[in-house]
Length: 149
Image 1 (cartoon, rainbow, N blue to C red):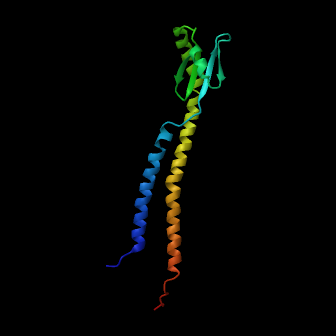
Image 2: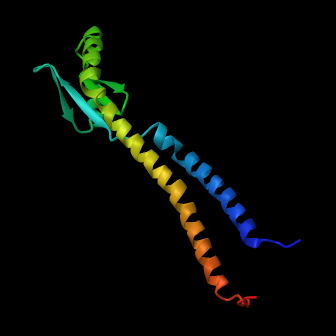
Image 3: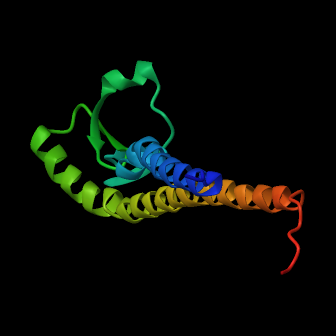
């Protein structure tokens, strides 16, 4: 029984490539499922009846505002003197105008993460395979040539 080292190494490469793809999928799963978007804060201006994009509300000013957390890392701040039923209506309009458009950004970030995961899952094993074939080619150069019969 002759041992075929190259066939055995190729089979190890196949197993290693599969395990690598699983490892990349595990590490990238959270970024694909919940892509991170930068936080956006909006403050309701009762004088104009509109939402203005604002920076981070300082801790000492939070006692004057209700904070509403929306999907896609969007926050709205309402003055405490606004009635709760008005805030609910304003929040519905706010979500339609400011939160839903960020769904496209979420999908773009998700697609970026998927393409990065596929790149890592495929390119690293491919580089290892090419290195293995280059090594095989180099070692074959040292073998004794066989005479033609």
